[in-house]
Length: 228
Image (cartoon, rainbow, N blue to C red; front, side, top):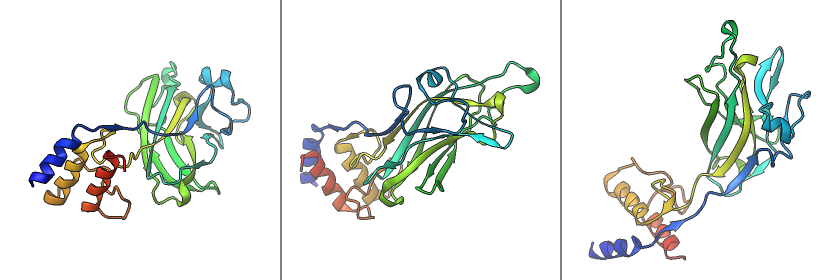
């Protein structure tokens, strides 16, 4: 016990901070390889800046935004960060509906089949929009996927215009408590799990990737902190 306390005190003075790796970006400077399915609106700097990349359905057509293929080998989870604007109509008879305008974020495989999907529900009427979606991709072969953004239920008065999309690696190996850093507190979090079954702060507990959370994961964090 005394050795553990001394080691934790030593490690408490060590902080490893690693910025999330950016895997994919869409904005006014980064849109090559992306596909906007509305053929009469070109995907370019001006249209992105003017909020013309809108997601909605019209008749039998769905206007979506699809990314190029991403190869995130070794990545366990990602976070998709989306910035845009809701196209809010002032026409009372065709008022904006936040439920209709709620976006769906999908991961597609090479055959454009949906692997994973999440619908983010808007509950308020606002113009400026920002939301985040997390995906576990540890079960996706080779970490290969495309990203598709859609508003399957939206009409023209409830469309969502996409201004920026950033996909980041959301699993910093060793950051067990999810605070964005690797510190002695991550060791404590695993100890709390092993001794007390406390999972309240456990995010990425399987540090060594063997499929289990054991004392070897504590050793793995020590090695990270000590630069081994």
